[in-house]
Length: 360
Image (cartoon, rainbow, N blue to C red; front, top):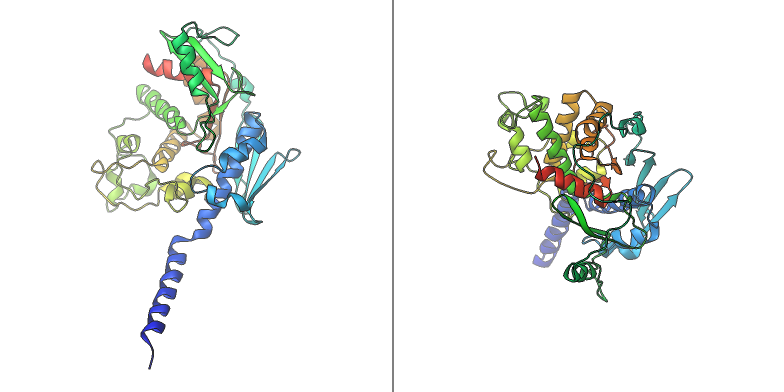
């Protein structure tokens, strides 16, 4: 006769096997190594930071901190690559390309590499619409209270979580009135924008709307959703902008969520995101979601004619008119703008961007 303990043990074993199949913890670990590899790559080769310092900062992130004792990275300056692994397993690799930042190398498929003349794109054909916001030197605060605020912004405690502040730029009436930078950071240092990247994508969508390329109120021009029988065909561009698509693309940064896996496990990020099933009618549920912004990036790419045209559009219509100079846009392996995280720009350029948005 089979004992109850044996049955209970068997059920637990089955549950663990099912959980392993469904959750795929190996994918979550590869998300961690992908984040470390890509972040070290971008911050080392684009920003010029010390890779060991970047690794220390990246491995402090929630969810990655537990893996830190086993996390390893290798930076090859000659090949301009960064590899990361957990005890030699679950390896991820990112590669730098001059002018275009870093891209993940996933599997045997080679990523799409842009062939634009980036310096030509950065050469404006007309004066910027915004006046210069500061001179060539760091602007020191004249107000003691403002100086104290900057002092506080760069203070660090004795234990984590650390602030790791890189730069603060204070603007009033369109001009810098105070700024401060961490050691190794200057007024021209490109800084990783993380989710400020989403605002860049939204600005490009706004420009395209103004120019008549599309409208927020139209169904999202995504071929995979066009069939009348597909419930996603009613998702509008505005739903993507507001993150109210109702799709199963919630972002938890756990490594198990679709958003995290899109960023570090898929060459074609938007191609992964379009497959998400609906879990609520559009407009009825809000959830923060990087994949919805990635879908907007593919809409931009399709509308303007491809990756090179996307880059040219961004410089011609957004960065050059705002006087932004130290910007690097990264692309995914399919040649679509990496829309959620990996735009790098100097702190002053991020300030110019915010001033420009305020004047729209």
